[in-house]
Image 1 (cartoon, rainbow, N blue to C red):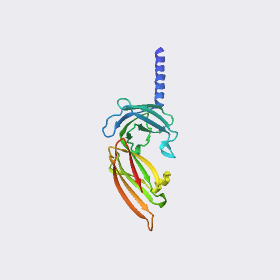
Image 2 (cartoon, helix red, strand yellow):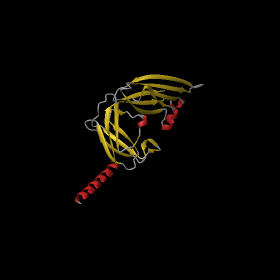
Image 3 (cartoon, rainbow, N blue to C red):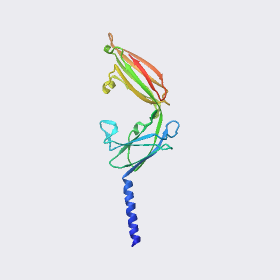
Image 4 (cartoon, rainbow, N blue to C red):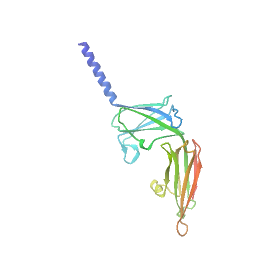
Length: 229
């Protein structure tokens, strides 16, 4: 009889432990350098959780929940959180002087098991601050800026960002005087290529000119590029 009671007690404990495990999610992995494959100890990893994407901001989740840890001496991170109603997650690294390699299709991931493992990649960063001014705002001149750069996930082709009149209007920028900052992987962008298109309306028909320049960049620095038109 005592033996039967002991078996029942062990069964109840086992069921209780299984139930607790089912209510928890473990996120585990490593943070390593994208180029050298070395690990990053003492690096902050932020876990974003949510039941779905925010309809107003695709870079965040609805009812977003945040948690953070630091990697150990081997560059490993570990989270153990309650399951709740979370269906999606993403992991963001916060380390000054470095930029995370987040492939566009992996901005958010589905939670499809109670144990999820991800390797996170970092690279040395460089900042570019574009300072754009119109020397005569009343002249009606218009400018567009095309920035060409490289990313780890598209090494064969340059990625491009176009700063156009439509972009200025959408962001609420004054095209005659604005500053914009971008971060890039230094290992892939020791220099950056910028093409500037200026349309002038002084007299007669509009006249369009194109300037194309490359700028050398310094790692872990804010590289200021002044553009006047």
